[in-house]
Image (cartoon, rainbow, N blue to C red; front, side, top):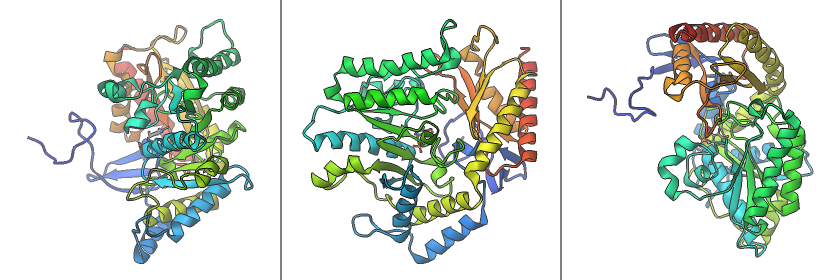
Length: 447
Ligand code: PLP
């Protein structure tokens, strides 16, 4: 007999019932306290139950919560789009916002806009999107077609587009004789080869997470890598879509992760941290240059949803951005990230199954291996990531399960990505709880 009518991600799992949150903590109905070491799914980036956001929710609800996007626009949606343009790179290089409800929809929208951009110019065959084998762009069919997530793809494979893929710049697992920079350039040049093989006349865009998140356990490429990628895209007339659903809005110590690389994407997608979990909203930010032929041509973007540009969600996202700016959380993410990554590297000295600790700002990945020097992953059936996540949860720490991207993501990794508001004492508690969890799992498995 089911004890609940709610369908959960896994029928086997029993989840605690969240009662309320406060700052970086979540409390369940029995009063147990959890340190949110991952901001949920890298989302709750300003912490829980922030009074300013609660205020913004009520204020907007008193005015109006819903208008239909084909009948009205609204002040919060207009202001939010203006704010995102102000934040995106240089002010004289405008990006326009198209609002949707989830990261998957944002990437789905980006795909369609890229195809439409070429169609408006008579290039009807440009409809393929190249992505990386190790990537996650979402669960809807278009987004899944662009994703390299073997587990999520395999059941639906016959229904997915067979888009070309290239290798991720995954330096930790490069061939021993190659330098990281040579390896990254080789990975970037795979894009050139893939476009030539497919035929540039068929390729609409290349999509990439600036820093690969859940599919690769946080893989951070160098600036040279993205400079080369952009050169290749420009050379072949292929658009560059940056999927910043996980990395955007301060998570990596810059407002947008592409700022680390000095490369401006043609389309940039956002989700998760955009409303910090207070309302479902996501966006595709489209460069003016890409909209130009659409404005002159069919004059409309073919897409959108009933809840697109929802005033309630827009007001929340606007309040979140105001909060982030007021409390300088982007800088804080960079500083806190530096401290936390160092503490986690120190922790790794006592936890021999930690192979690598890597990240930018407060997006940090930890990859686990059974042998430090050979970097051999644990057997898949051991389910180490799950054991670690459950052990940590029992100790009152929430961490995000990821995969390590080896042969379709079979390796073990976790993401540590607490709210950007976390303080030093809370970070120390996080590291201690994680260290204890890893030690206990090592002991249980006699590793
Ligand atoms: N893109 C990236 C990089 C993500 O990490 C995710 C979600 O984890 C998505 C897209 C999909 O976003 P959503 O789950 O909101 O549909």
